[in-house]
Image (cartoon, rainbow, N blue to C red; front, side, top):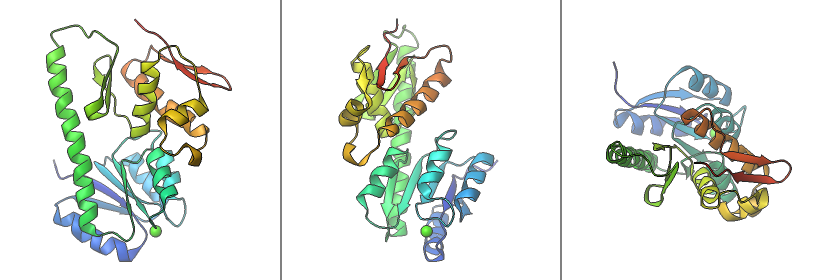
Length: 238
Ligand code: CA
């Protein structure tokens, strides 16, 4: 059994692949390469990866399209490579579920340190979760929802949800205001950093993803209520 970390690197530019390959292999990571969006999706469907590096400018699908597709079934940490220091690209990337981004030109060292930072964050989260679970194992959880601001984590029935930044903010807002009906626009204004650059249907995508994650923990409950053509609220649960 190989316990090297497995990275999928999706990039079509040879000038970037070469130094990146060198830097990643130097860290003793096992790197799989894909140079189109379609082949990336196929790889992700068929194999396990610990990390995904995804270029936005691919020859077939854009990296954004690839990310949207894979986020319906996969939540591996993901770093976007954007062609320029374009704010819109960065915002879109984070909204559709990336953990971070690197704007070209970048140094391979920068990528490596970003990946390590994301990993460190995850490890700390998992460690805190383990400690927390130990401490609550002897007692009944007092609440269905528990928000931890320091780790940006929400526990649902004492199990940590793996949420993206915007999913966390969105769910937290709903938890803080049970039964209050929010319009999509209100949710965007409260949660998104640049709501003017975003579409209301982005809210739907995020809610869908949150629901999937909640369902994995408790398939029989559907805590988020849809108000057709308007928005969402969170049911009061006991
Ligand atoms: Ca490219």
